[in-house]
Length: 461
Ligand SMILES: [Zn+2]
Image: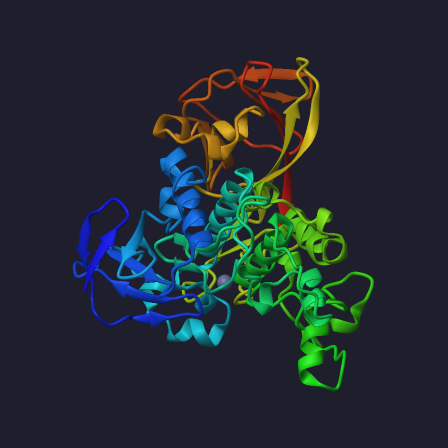
């Protein structure tokens, strides 16, 4: 079929749709590089909304580095009917709905080269938080974050948000859809149940969906679906469980929705991410303003990545796990215990307070492992990881190494002004030199006033 875009160009598309949704039919271009969605109806309000999405609210135009994260609309179709054109997400790397990674059964049926491991999942979760952050930071809300609208290839560490033709801009683009049941914020489910029509998805309702998706991706379980029965009628029970009476399966004060068998809970994600989950699914259920914002998820998930240890079992499906404070190094995915080395250093980072020699504790905790590296965002409290985009800004500054005779060493690759204080002595560790890590040491990760301090302690495994 011949398609005419708003700017007058023509393109050839398949005659038969490859998918059909409530909002329209999807067709591939003959070269498979593009996808169009045809709505089948003329709708002036929709056309105006689409022009805004492709124009003034187009994040991918303002920030090209974010473009791979979105299947943004890149053309408006005028003939044969109103529609939108996007790049085909599967053109170079095959993607599948994120829901494939939400249960062990589905995962088994995925091609092995797409599955990835748990470390890859944590990366995808961070990218999803970045996607939400980009949207919300520009005043946009997606209104339908769900396992079907994030397409991923976890092994290749790719995730893309689709269905961007229904974006909501508060007071400019009104909501056209209200979301997908499992991910709908409780206030929307309750309003629907009461038959209210004036329900408004918002950035805050997106944040609920995001928290549910991250929980599902990392723990393969829905955070509100537990054994508790709210009503004998299954439909009402479902509405109450996701709406008015929503109850976190890990609620610290009300254990009535807790799975009856032992399960892998948010504790395994480390204190900071566990804390965000608790906030999202306790206070945040009733009070949308209490929900963690996307940037908070992104930063906490970045810091979580610095606490992972590789599992030593070659058949382990998880491959990495978080070394929890004061817990033995046992992989929760396969129960293998890491027995060597017997002690692992943990660094607590302290931010500079602006005054030389005065520091305050950060949330950052780095679990040392062979080959783990320190970067500018660890060393300097005024640099955020996502801001370091150029290769020279991302280069490692120091590396941890294990030497069977001497123990754990920090090797200075490129960190100017690295010093270590032990007792009353302060030593300089010049570039190219290594120094043994010891309990109680304080490392100064640079000479200027933004440099962080790291306190070393050892955890027995
Ligand atoms: Zn394991």
